[in-house]
Amino acid sequence: FFGTAPSWLTPNVSCAVVDVTPSCDPGTSACTRRMAQLGAFRAPGLLLLLLLACLATCAEAAQLIFEPSTMDATKFDITNRWSTLPANGTAPFLMQHSLVELAGSLAAFGGWHAETARGTPLISGDLYLYDLFAGVWGKVDLDPDNTTHPTPQGRHSHTAVVYNGTMYVFGGESNAETFGDLWSYDPGTAEWTQVDGSKWATSGSPPPPTKGHCAQVLGDTMLVFGGLQSPIAGAQTYSNTLYSYNFVSNAWSTVPSAASPDPRAYQSCVWYTNTSKIL
Image (cartoon, rainbow, N blue to C red; front, side, top):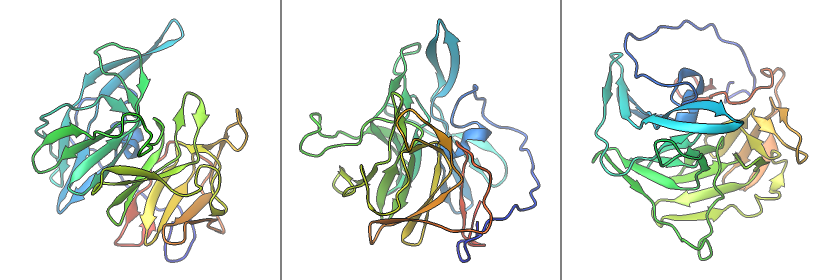
C-alpha cells in the first residue's frame, strides 16, 4: 500500500531463511506466521524481538490447555544471528498480545496469560514493560479498583501503536466479545484514557468491533486493515477495508483504493519508510 498515493499492489518477493532461529511451539506469537502479534523494536542495525511465552496449545476434553515452555527475550541482528537478552524481573507468559517500543522500553499489553506451568488460560489486561537498557521486566501498577483511572478491559488479538510518545490500543476480543474501542496510555503519567466516544462511535466512519487486524501509524493517522469484524453481535466477517484514524481531529474515515487485497485476519503489516509503503 502506497502512503503517498492510496493504492494496493502485489510486490515481487524473494525470501531467505536464516540458519539459526529460536525454538518455538505452535501457536506462539513469535512464529513466522504471527510475527506482528509479537511486535518489534528497530534500533540502528538491530531488530529486537521478544519471544514471550512460547505456548503449546492442545484440546483436551473440549478445554484449551496452555503450557508455557519459555519466556525468553531474544534479539536478531543484521548478521542473521540470534542471542538471548538478559531478562531480570517477572516476565509474563503471553500470546496474542501487543508489543511496541515505548519510551525506551518494550510495552506488552493484553493477550492470553497463564501464570502457572499448566493452568487455566486467562485473558490479561495487564501492562508489562521490558527496559531495553537495563534488561529488566516490570508490571505497571494501575488503579486496582478501576475507578479513579479506568483501564481497558483485558483482551487479545488487538493492536497497539505509538504516536507522539503515547500508546494507542484498538479492538481485540475477550470472552467472545469483540471490541471497537480505542484507548491511550501515557507512560509519563502511567494512566490509561479511553478516547472520547470511541466505545460507541467517533466522528466519521469508525470500524465495527474488530479483532485480528493490523495497524500502523502514518503521519498523524493510524491505519487499520483487515481482521475479523462483528458489525452484529454473534456474526463475524473477514475484512479488507482500510480505515484511517486521525489523532488530531479524533475522526475515522475509510481509505478508497482502486484495488484491495483479499479479506483476511491475523496478518501483519509494517511501514517501510524508505519507499513510503505499507507491506
